[in-house]
Length: 473
Ligand code: NAP
Ligand code: MG
Image (cartoon, rainbow, N blue to C red):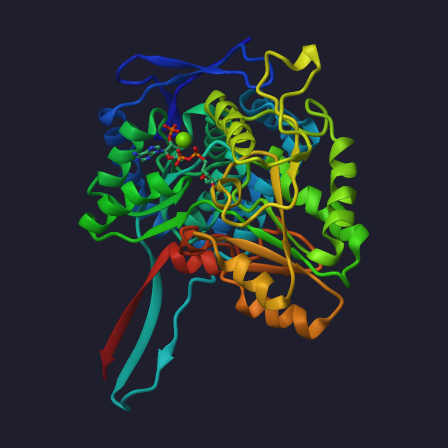
């Protein structure tokens, strides 16, 4: 059964001005997915107008009450976690446990920022005995939020929770391929009592609805998560409009394993790093840098774990048909470049999975960092293992990438761990562990991975701006 999905504007379901819908794919079967409203400029105008109407009252809403609403939303999301996970599965095909943990993580954002509504504060500046000078952080007003299809609910929650907590109102444009849970989130927000217009969702194509959202003169800040190419397009519009932008883009993160590491744990974490969400995560650890002395043994250990992961069970499908084709294209490139897969590099044999967008988790060994598969983000469960000799080599190879999102260092030598972590060009570095989803930790990139920060207390600074007030006695 498919559902017909409309915009959520001004606290209610709104049919698209075009009256047109696009039928999506069900990635687990290859059959029809949800019917998603094809919005246009009129829908964007309606959503932004509703947000603008709501902005002043929301900014002046007592912060404790604002926090209570965020907390109530977190509670309701947890109550409805099965329903929300099922919607996410319809759009993305991910395993139930993965979808449930995504819902939990999404709820945790609202819970965390519910307690921080009073935090965007300022300072008192001691300048002149006859003046009282202070700074205060104020919301921007209408925030445009554009999210990708990989962890759709999480992406929406990650941006909406701090934006709303800081006193902004939001208009969200989720990816066409997976819009259902963002609409559900907005519906639940209305249900717990968020005033109409504070939380709007407008559906449709990025090139149309997304672009119009960034162009709209009343949108005062944009938070974008997605590809570098679209980030650049949006960046040009934001520059012309002189509005701030947060860009959370791609990654090609290096997971660096030295010979003295706890190799057993490092191997299992190396697998988690690139197979979580079937590798469709910007922070996936897709370059495994292994010290040459242990390269073969370590890669064998990784490949042995990967062989146990079953597509359709532990590993979900590629979420879009395009992405499914994209990953297969990289398998072809690997063949052309003479790369040898230790495991995978192909599609599952299982007939039952044939309609769906499944690929086998894949490990290539002894790869040179200049190979296409070592430089380009694949956004699928594909790992390249790259040997290195010295600490300096490891740092050089890790940083020889357009991206700089996350990285990990595995060693028992604490001095080396700190040295390497300081040299790595990435927004976050993990030592003897792999990435955390914890909502408290600030997150963002260096280089083509983007700028600005989401998550943690830090995000509140990106959803508010500073005013300085000077009072003469
Ligand atoms: P994408 O193609 O850049 O799309 C992201 C969003 O932008 C979608 O909602 C899309 O809409 C919209 N969009 C497309 N063209 C647009 C335009 N011209 N103007 C405004 N909006 C536009 O990325 P994706 O294919 O969904 O996701 C994969 C990419 O996202 C990967 O590169 C990955 O690394 C990155 N990512 C980064 C993070 C992070 O936190 N750093 C997290 C997840 C993913 P439609 O697709 O609906 O048309
Ligand atoms: Mg895309």
